[in-house]
Length: 220
Image 1 (spheres, one colour):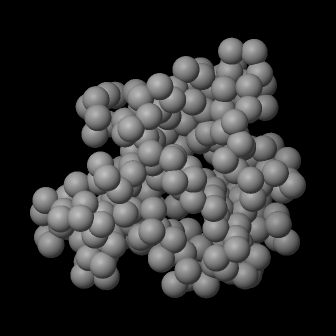
Image 2: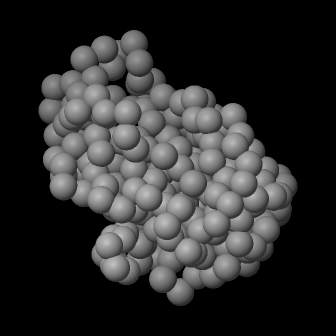
């Protein structure tokens, strides 16, 4: 990822989206005042419930009960709040369709990424081979402990155990996307841990904080 600054605001951008018609930012901990950032006005937020509901977005400034949204409308910023969960941006440069999605471990178990891709295909005739998917900073494998994983995870996840009870959720996400037909060349996983980087990111597992990191994206 690429780190950028403007005044007191710092954020990260994905390399795969540098030439795309997408404005996006993963705001760092010290820059969580997203409303001060003039790229993004009348932001669409979501009441995230760790489910797999994906909303279709056609106007600014909404607050929807869903864990992500899809839009074909320009200049409608979609925001995901996260503290260890994955925030994933989906972009089809051919159909010019954008999604921003929240996926914690429960979302991965429910395969919210499949829900997103299938909805993009159904609603906007997206070709999976054109999809670019970028997953930002989130819980890293050496802090991703699940002592009840046999009850919580499907068996297909068990192979991603890196040591007893610890799992690589980044690789699980990549596995799910590849199974859906998204080309490996079009997948960027930041592989930046939120737990171990207390300077830049909030982490629920580390601090039990109510604060959240924010990832915003909009078609330009």
